Length: 139
Image 1 (cartoon, one colour):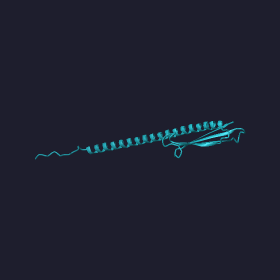
Image 2 (cartoon, one colour):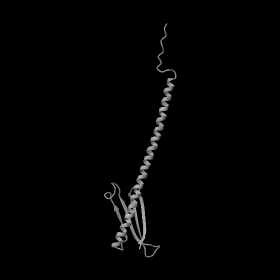
Image 3 (tube, rainbow, N blue to C red):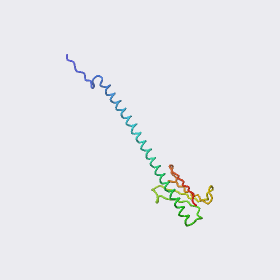
Image 4 (spheres, rainbow, N blue to C red):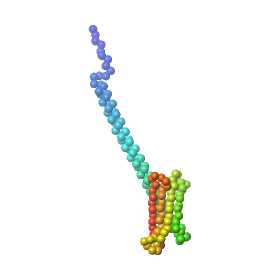
């Protein structure tokens, strides 16, 4: 009587090798996912820092412009005490507004001088709003 060969789909120990390969593939996928998640987080943080730096630079320029505006106004009217300067998105980036408050007051520490203060907020009503204050004494 002839024996029929057994019909095994995998050689002995083959299932264990396939299981190990599957485990290695899953571990590689997990490590890749963690690396991608870290890269995405780093990119998001870099983007936020870049936006904050943009806001800081814009607010600084606005505060300087507010101070220059005060000097210009004081040339034509030495009794001018300041105002609030609001810039809309037509003058700035879309969706961004700014406010510059300018005050002129007698300096309490040095007689004969006036303190010019320009306070710039950019962007107004934004969670990452930046405020820059420029204060200088003028005769």
